[in-house]
Image 1 (cartoon, helix red, strand yellow):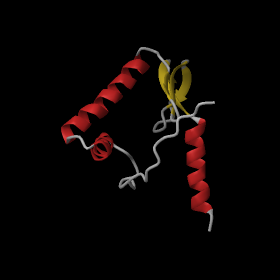
Image 2: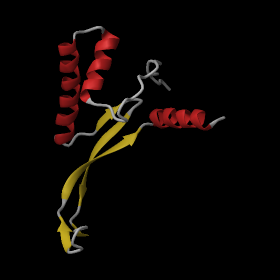
Image 3: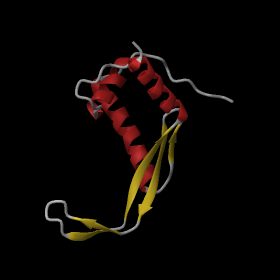
Image 4: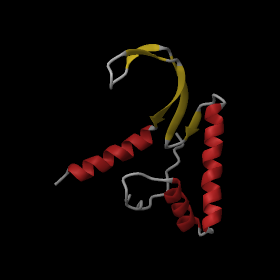
Length: 117
């Protein structure tokens, strides 16, 4: 079994509890030593490729990270939470993400470390 191991580096601590495109571009800039504009272009290129593949209905699999799938949801009854009036929720396509086993293992390893005294 050939498993690609991600580069082991200490991730920067999230400031706001979320990662933005600017954060990704800054990480690319720091790790690759490219200009800020080039790092923004690289992040945009990757995100555009992922978006176009998803929109065309393809499954996007990123090894040791996870996969994005397009799933269709049927129409269903719903309710307006403000008024309580019943309203149908239309059929639509949604994107789901399934984390890889490696990502889940890393996540759970971090949680075990945080819980241990």
